[in-house]
Amino acid sequence: MQIDNEAVEEVTFIKDYYGEQHAKYVGNFMYCCHTLEHIQPTFEFINSLRRSIGYHHVPVFFELPVLPVFSRI
Image (cartoon, rainbow, N blue to C red; front, side, top):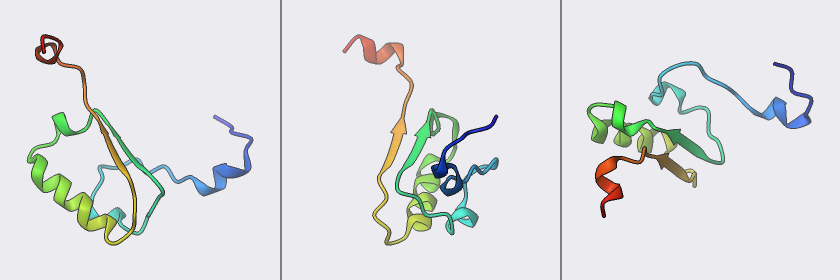
């Protein structure tokens, strides 16, 4: 796919599972789409993510699926 926009030079796509080896790629925003429900152990993943962000002010957004149990609340 060809994208004709000058901002494309500032975007990096990494086809890999996220890990601390990617800490050198500091962005403005981190978006995780339907991620946490598939990662075990979840707590260790979140801690790894936190360590890789370091002292940078990067908002992290986790999108979670809508589960039927929540629709009854």
